[in-house]
Image 1 (cartoon, rainbow, N blue to C red):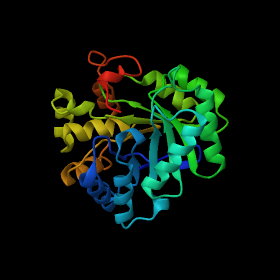
Image 2 (cartoon, rainbow, N blue to C red):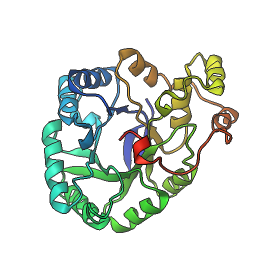
Image 3 (cartoon, helix red, strand yellow):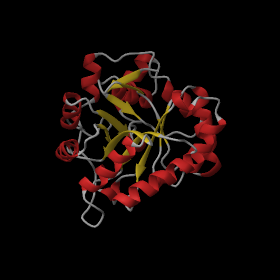
Image 4 (cartoon, rainbow, N blue to C red):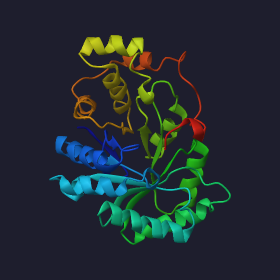
Length: 274
């Protein structure tokens, strides 16, 4: 699996997203994924599965230092006290002494806390060694710029929805300039890529599925990591099998067909998974 170098840290370009994975299925999926070679796991306080993710990691014969682990602050945990308390709770549930990455899940609203207060508490967690990197999720380029200006610790990533039908070039350009990782969630457009004629045709050329072509399109872009959700062994294996072929420049452009690409940074909350 390829790695991405961001701010001097190596991050696997492909990870496992765990949204909607719960209970025994979540634990087994994480354990199976790590056994297959996944080394990048993404969860969130809002998913309600941190304990199961932790149990899956514990069951796998993989050193903790070899896994890049991310969780995200729930919307109710944005003031200084809640950031500290909830992060320690996440660490306990995950069964780990530290997080590789802690994110603000969605931009703060006025009733939560100021962005300065949230980032200040996250910075303190970095200084205490409980968190190695901090970042944001679903932030526009302007909000990301503001976060970078406020935070004393570098903003490591902006995790956003990104796939062939959602244009994130403005954000990606910004991230590349400032050495920020763009992490793509819902990279398969919630199954929308599976019947795409262009992806089908390109996939036939390489003996790959449309989903594999879509994932390859993402991880082939400089500074982009993808975290597709999967639960079956078949899908876990298929998602990993995107590093043995390379798309041409023409194919990369064809996949990003302007006629089917939307613009903007994020959907309305009601239209998106966490």
